[in-house]
Length: 289
Image (cartoon, rainbow, N blue to C red):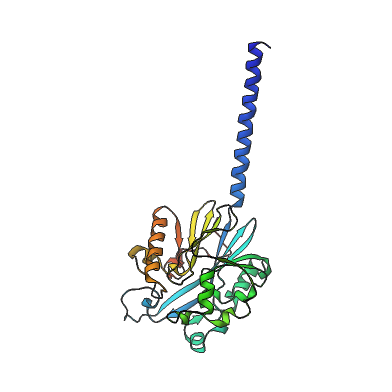
């Protein structure tokens, strides 16, 4: 074979390798894009408290009624639907709370809102619980066929609560859920739900002993953190304020500083109970992608 023919043959192989590499990269990028989920935000109720300092540390005594939203979230992922928190259930609340400080109309109940998107509770593959306080765990019992992703320490803390924060856990929310399917995470691990970086649970304890937040990697919006009650309001990030209800103030401060770092690095932070921030949120059926 002449040198000229050898050169042409090598050139053909080189072009094929380049073309194949381009195809592989294109397919991989497309697959990665397809794996990125859509995020729906549901307002599932409101809570009226007599003073802001009941949830955010700071000066008390203003006694200005403070009405806070309560949220749950749905992630639509090619591998399945994920619900994050289930909202509050007035039926399990003490009478004084049900009459005076909690609004959760029937049409805002999480299963009713899922139905508006064409889903039923049995369509939910995973339910991620940020924690098990009454405004997050109220409707766990609606999802007996789902797998619950929760920190082991949070389960322990909800069933046998520390007396300092016991009022926020309601045994009525947990009744009937003991035999559900659970993925019990320890407090040392971050958990990549689908092993593709699209939905990652990470520990943000302090507010409770097993609190976790959820990092969602969206195609257009980028990285978003659903904080749960690790962060009630954006003001807590701006002023380094702790939650007033804190199982461990020291760990709560570490969590705030971690979320501050994530915001500096360009992550969108969505707090759990910020009435001012709520004006900027798109609620279902709109979604983020």
